[in-house]
Length: 228
Image (cartoon, rainbow, N blue to C red; front, side, top):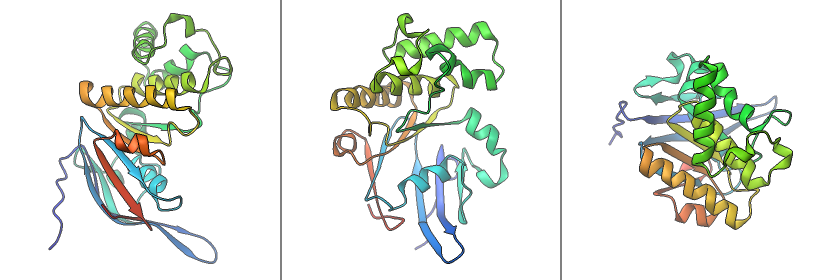
């Protein structure tokens, strides 16, 4: 029986397939994936390296367009939207290596997405401070450069930057991969609070079984397909 997809869900993958084409071969990284993601939940996408996890979230984020199938955000396909605006206003991506600007202070890093959105400077600074405080970083951190922070602190700055832009979907690719267990736990608790108390949709690619255990829903992938 054909699977019915509710295109009015927050984020929907509808029979998404993605292929990398090289000179000598075609690699089917994601195969016929259909899934509905809701606000207020933490999802963990797990599976062996090369199973298609990162390619899937890159496609959900609009960094790739599916080779076949479609991704819908609030009912609109990524094929038929301004994907630059989508990535700027609706989706926040957090990476394992933090991706902070090394020559910008903590405050300047968090201000960056709001500058792209042309928010008034006074409002943007207030929002940045609020988001940093929400991830446990007080005013003493504002003037520090990323090199002056621990890995856990840098990842929390990256989360604050993601929150500052107002996006309601967070896609995190191995966000605790470079962190010790204590800092990884702090980051996961932040994601849980954002989903359960503030209604974010959080989708995490992870190899960490503890992160998977603490997520609301675990999605397992093998050879580009969802198997559970």
